[in-house]
Image 1 (tube, rainbow, N blue to C red):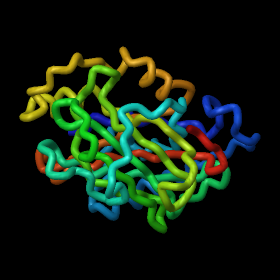
Image 2: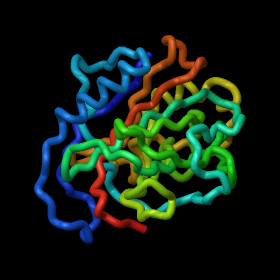
Image 3: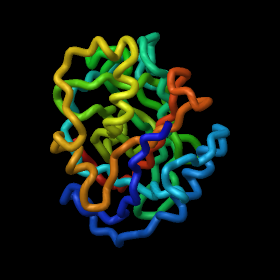
Image 4: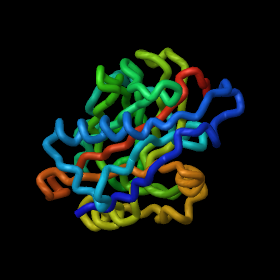
Amino acid sequence: MHFSSLAICAAALCGMASAAPALSARDCSAEAAAMNLARRAKRGLSPRSIYPNMPNEICVLAPEIPKTNYVRSGSVVRNNVSDGQAGVQLFMDIGVLDITTCKPLTNTVVEIWSPNAVGKYSNTALRGAYPTGANGIAEIQTIFPGFTSDGANHINIAVHSGDSMSTTTSHNGRVFFTDGWTNIIGMSSPYNQNTNTRIMDLDDPIYIDANSNGYTAVVDIEEINDDWPEGIVGYITVGINPSLVVN
């Protein structure tokens, strides 16, 4: 089962903060496509997308939004933030590309935080960060989030400009899940105990902005062993300008 809705994303800088330095637009599609195919090959997952070819080329996650429900926990740098929380295991595979060079960004800290299966945030669980490796990919284990009442189902993400949490932040945003995946997983326990008001993707202005003008911020899902209760892998490629500084 595959509810992917990834589309080709422009590498232009529209929607980014005006403080960003002027840059020539680059087409990073070839580099990003090679990166994406290598990621699936590593996991032994074929690109069983609804598309004949891998289309998720590069995503500049626009617009920048303020951090919400953000708490920096004690042991924040770790690649498993699931903390024993009940839910479907989600292995986030987050590729980071420098849109000024079309090269993978290594040793770049990617931070994520999300609610639990019933849509509630904790001050410690499901929060953490991990640096990208030599391939420009950060792999972080979490759980598929339960929806909240403040927007379409999502995981919060921040990408730093360097290899530690003390470096500046180059992107704050959200990555989203299709309504189909939220519906399917939401029928299982404990997700079916969520009492929050459900907001569908197209009813969320942040989702619409993040998926307009050639951008996409939708996670591409692959089931492990074709059986989502065993776990799922979520792919997203983030294109950033490392010299951009956001709050």
